[in-house]
Length: 352
Ligand code: SF4
Ligand code: SF4
Ligand code: SF4
Image (cartoon, rainbow, N blue to C red; front, side):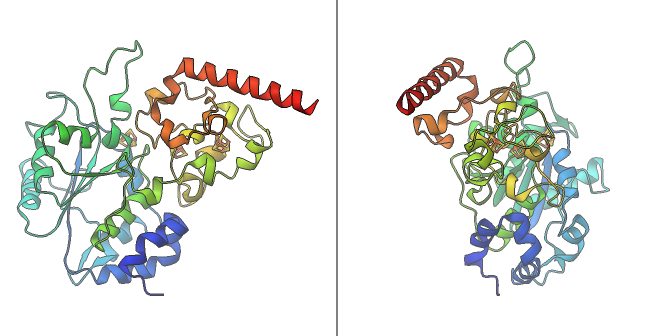
């Protein structure tokens, strides 16, 4: 099978990123050889724990060494994802590192900017004597494509969470897209959330851009091919347990994790079929989904171990429509439980 640009993302969607990469790697590599020119990548770090870099470094099939050395783009002789600038892996530091960044900015070839980490208010994050906001602005202005990786860079994530006393976040941490709009840069950011971002998502997104396929995005800027399906409704292997009312209350038992607080019903992600650590398992297999692919996480998804009000089926409202504000809607939740309770009573009466 020859991998055409046209069916590239279709295949990824149909097979899942992991299966696609395992099954079609040779085709992907071949397709990348047709790419005419090398793409320059700049990977910036804002308010982050660097876990997304680690996740990227743990990519498997292709692994990081293959990504950085073997999977070459076009006839450039250069690998697909060898960033021109990436603090964590390049040996340059100080002024020399800043020169690498400037060289990336000046390059006449296609440029991709990858951002890991949230954008804080002025004064909270300084690199080489310059505020991170300035670094980001300068890079975003010249980038052909901008990819935010991880929950911090997409929607603010943990750096943007409220302190324990419920006061607003003192650093004003926000996602890259929000920051760019704030400073008047109207470029679309491709958001690859999760904490951390999945390496498959990063690699396939990079490859698709290089192949000339811009992923279709949902209203939160996420590629639909990875985040277009609700885990609970369409992908979770434990769904049959949910439908039969078999719920568990602690990890290790067999059944649906809904009553443990699983956020699958309000989370759009392909984690259930893609899995993590080279397809070993994913959060729900060992515990619950805490919803890290969604905007508003973690605040609007906590407490993590509280049951999600069962809105989607009871009121016929799609989980995606309900969005990230659901967990904060206590009164609504109480109302829903009341509806469920009434529904159950009515059902019992009809049976009688
Ligand atoms: S998204 Fe998670 S793993 Fe990635 S930088 Fe933020 S806190 Fe770390
Ligand atoms: S609640 Fe969680 S474990 Fe249960 S079916 Fe939905 S996604 Fe799966
Ligand atoms: S299963 Fe849920 S908590 Fe786990 S990575 Fe996916 S979206 Fe995040």
